[in-house]
Length: 243
Length: 243
Image (cartoon, rainbow over the protein chains, first blue to last red):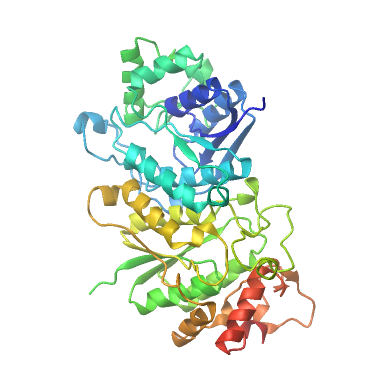
């Protein structure tokens, strides 16, 4: 039987890479979609490429546009990436400076366009609402509203050929369970990248990071580094990126 | 009193240019947003620039990305732009080959991002559902669903500072009434561009089209040219672009 196509949003971080491995385990033909939005942490694009290659995706598409023209986030403007994790400052109900206005909406919109062309009923996203992130566009009610809108927006759904589904298999998982899931699926987390604000690499270079854009290492202090460290610690696993 | 900001999606065609003039008449500070998505009819970008300039927008932002990488439309792939208007072939309930998968969803998503940064409660779009277009993402039920999603997606709405509104003031207007509205507002339609499949310009050049990208003239036969011609005829006005 022919495999069904799925579009998977892939940043190259822990969550989206785990989702890609999960979608593969469900037997989908994988179409990975990554965005070069002129983010400060472009290093994640290399990770997306490596993870895509390793998991044997059918096609990896990188769509390029410049969200610095819009700004409004520490990831896309002169605003500094906070170096005391906002998780520590405000353990709940605070939207951090790394929030990028409408980012998941933009990403899912391109995902929807590609899914319609590929006749892929299923779109996967690594959104997670349990451990702290604070991003409004990672919540289940948001994803449900996007799905409803998507099925009114597109030719294929209006013609009744199928309904698009936005799948967020990690949405209710603890970060440490995400790591355990990925490891059970054989995912190599040394290929992934999380840091929002990479630092220039000083020799001797950690071999795994060689060849990354600009030669950079994780800062170890931004939200994303802190969550990653907590997740690996809770899972009782050493982060292979930092080996 | 300080003017309120509004984001207006502007292709440079008749509908979106009329909406820009309408939003100006309502007293908004205008932020016009145009997309260079590698469409075949890039000539519309020049029109968007001219219309923006003439209407005194505060900022005109052109976001660039390549929808040909996704394809699926006669406007963004090798597929030919139909030269017998699909309106004539199928006067209703047919989605034409010029449909671009999820285009308005992508456009509105960037509009939402910019609106959040500008603290602009109102986003304007030239969608029209009365005269034939057949695009699912021009229908009121779609726009309503986008608005609901937008208000779950964004920091500013989740924090309760305001609700985004997607305004489509032309949605129930006849094309000829759109023209009449724009003319009453003093809009110069010679600056606008509609043709999906421009033809290379052969001398003598119509002076109004000089300086356009590549030097092109409207084909006169695609859907968009046919609707434009019908609209001007019904309105009892000569199309100043064709003077």
